[in-house]
Image (cartoon, rainbow, N blue to C red; front, side):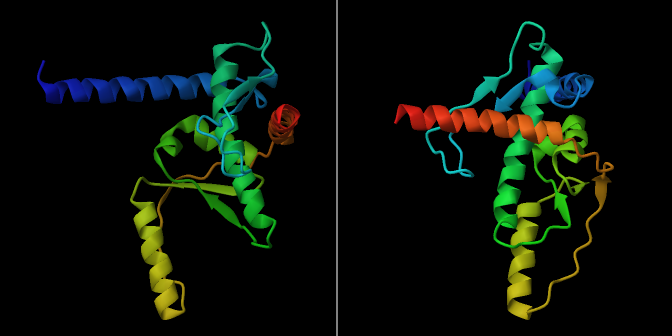
Length: 185
């Protein structure tokens, strides 16, 4: 097989797996049947836990379905982002909306579940180079003293549908992690 075709097959396969994972995640109810994923695969920066490891909580024979595990993975990733947003808010920064960028946000489950995890408006723009644009935006603002006008075309703006249960379960699982960690040191 031509190496270029192999790459196309791999990309298609990955896209199909992402679509399948999104479909699975959206089949589970908010809270994933009590399953929580703490996605600290390489430690965590907010909170500062550089040696932390990922963990699954709330698994039972009944709750360990593929749909619940898929949804818990998405909820855990998004709850980690909310923890970072809460840290920014704790120093007085007001937030009106969250703009989700990056490859994961092209996943329909991430877009829909974000509206349930963030207690604020969530926007997913069309794919683009937003890190570079953001740096240019900040530089222009710093140099001119005025925020430049930036047009952003949204591809998804799900209705806010905050589900407190998701954050409560995540915080409870994080508290177990912190308690266990402090008990070991």
